[in-house]
Length: 149
Image 1 (cartoon, rainbow, N blue to C red):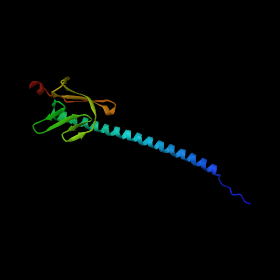
Image 2 (image 1 turned 90 degrees about the horizontal axis):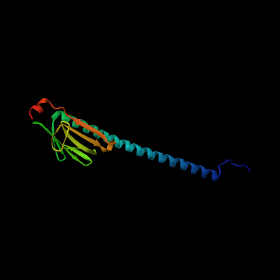
Image 3 (image 1 turned 180 degrees about the horizontal axis):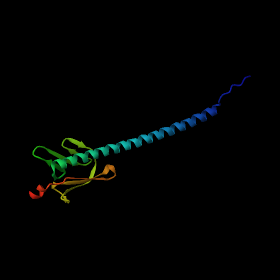
Image 4 (image 1 turned 120 degrees about the vertical axis):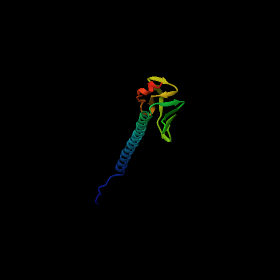
């Protein structure tokens, strides 16, 4: 009688168990990588929103000069055009654009002094989504501002 060389049932079960463990570890590692990529992607989007906000605020301050602040509204005005910002919890509106970023410690300045209402020449805030990154935007006023006062 010829004996056929083959694996026993026990050996096959052990291989299947080891294979199952390896596959489950691979799926766990994959899910952890996907979660990390999601966090990185969310942080990147928040950083792009903040950089965009910094750019438009800087452009508006340097285009219009002084802004008028009252309540949660910041308005830039000229004889030709105007830009209005509305600061809300978790986002802010710039005219019809929504900028989704959470900011805190919103402070307005005029000549280096805190302003609660009226003309402002600088703004400072902290982005809570990006490890409390502080942002300071300002404009340089010309001499006519001080002469016309």
